[in-house]
Length: 329
Ligand SMILES: [Zn+2]
Image (cartoon, rainbow, N blue to C red; front, side, top):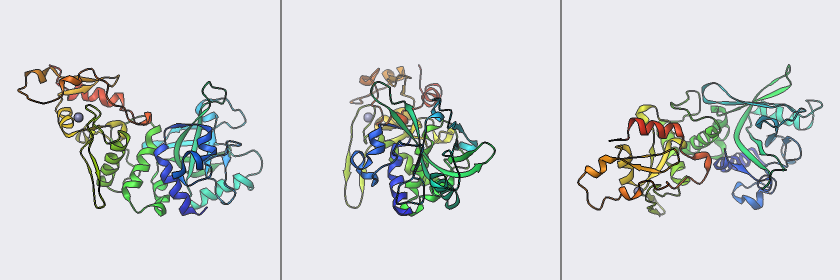
C-alpha cells in the first residue's frame, strides 16, 4: 500500500469518525465497507496494527483510553489546547526499535497519520462489541519517562498529510470537522486547527450536514436533488443553529438541514427545537396573516435525525437558539 493509497482510504473513512462500529467492520473491511479500498482497518489482535506491505502503522486501538482497565497498556485521552485532542499511547512491550514500535516511530518521522480506535463496548456486551473510530492523529512525539507515544488529533498536520489524496480544500476541511466530532461541542472556531479558507470550511459544513440528513428538510422532509453532469441542485440548506455572526461554529452539531421556507422561519425564531428534538412553533405564527404556509402542523413533531448520532444537534446550540432567536410570545 502506497502512502497515497493509504491517504485515499483514510479520507474515505473520515465519514465514520466519531461512530461506533463492529469488529467485522474493522477486520473484514473489504466486505463491510468496500469504498475504503482496504482489506482491513485493524486486526484487533494487538493494539498496534501494521499492514504487512507497509513500513507504517495504519491504526492503533486502545482499550484503556475509553475507561476499561487494561493495566499493561495504560493509554489516556484528553482534550488538547486550541481544539485539538491528545492520546498518550503505550508502545508494545519490548524493544522500541523493532516491529510495530519501530513502525510507529516511522510514522512519527515521516508525518504519516494513523487512525485511532477505542473500545466503547467490550466483547462480552450483549449485542456485541463496538469500537469507535476516533479519527486521525499524527504521532507527535515519544515520551521516554512515561513510555508513551503522544498522538495528536485535529492538527493542521493531519490535513496536510492527506493532501496527496485530494486537491480539494473542502475535502480536507471535512476531515478536520469530522476529526473534531469526538471533542465536546464548542462555540467559536478553535484557532490552530486546519482552516484552508473560510469559504472551503463553510462548503464542507454544507456538504456534511446535507449528506447527514439525506438532503431532506428535517422539519417537513421535503427533498429535491438533481445530479447533472455539470452541477448538482439541492433545495435544502444547512442552517447554522447558532448563527455564524454569534460565534456559531461550522460543526455539524451546530447544523440542521432545512428547506428554504423552514430555514427562513428558523432563523427568524418562528420555531425552535426542543431538547428531545421536537419542533416547537412560536405563538407569533398564529398572529401572522398566512396562506398555504406549512409550519404549525409540525408543532411537537420529531425532527428527522441525522444518519450518524455523532452529528446530532448539540443541546447547547439548540438552547442558545431557543433563548436568543425563538419568539416565545
Ligand atoms: Zn421544510
